Image (cartoon, rainbow, N blue to C red; front, side, top):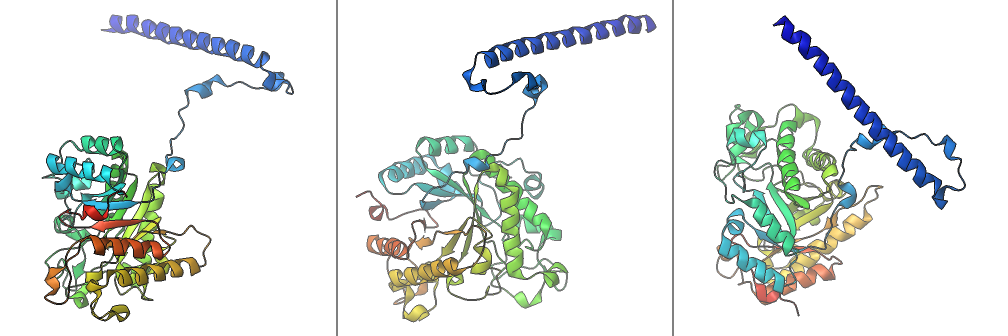
Length: 406
């Protein structure tokens, strides 16, 4: 055994010396080529090259890569697509074809949906821990991204944030609690992650980072707020809730996400309630316009006419006057954003528009939405001084006749 060691050690030493000689030889060759180039280049005639120190070891140093300078922006005219829709080949291909014939240039795709489940298999440890990708809608998601890239469709990742029945149930320590210590649930029985808990922030940012690495150019956080229904009086947000307002917590999360994802060169956007455009406070949900404008890159007010109370903005039945609702909301938001005094960049305003019929409102309180209603909302957006919009239809059945190229 000792004899083998004695033979092995000299061999290792000889190997190291050979490698060192090869590296030394390569370095000398590089130096010679460099000196020839410098000597015959007119670009260096005004310099004393004898003072130039060459450090060939720098050739082997790999710099950190940041994609921030290559951030891709687009004047978005988009539609929403569920994971199921992109996973069904026939529907996916048909929507691609319709998109190519229309003014639509972007898709907002569910990455983490309203139930807290993923569209594709994830490598994020906590996703595995809470079972959020135990059943996925798309197995070969890279093929989806390739098709979008080939057809010049701008990909936006929708990540439902704090409303997350899957994670909040599996990790009750991260959930919003009632004053009894139990996991609090809203009117529909859904559990929520606590927006004051920084560990929940990391969960969402990790999912967003993975989406960016898959090729998404815009990370859109939905339900980036506190709950609005259910028995909120019994909620206990813990000590953090006593030190920070809801509006401060939501803005801080978005700023944190933007900083953490900066190196990936993605846009950070956030969905907000339509009324946030015209009310002066945060409506106890943590969304305050002037606080959010400098905290993110894009804000998407959900100005669906069907979601406004009767008489809002002087409109007796809002769902029947889509132009007035959208124009009043977005023009007010633009004016408020422009009036905000800040040295920081301000978010672009990109409204969610209604492409569905709200028959659930009851007879006389809604109208059937078609080409005229979609065109009225888009016109209202442009008349308000804005250039971008996205259409919402939960089943992804859009009024394409309103979207075709002229």
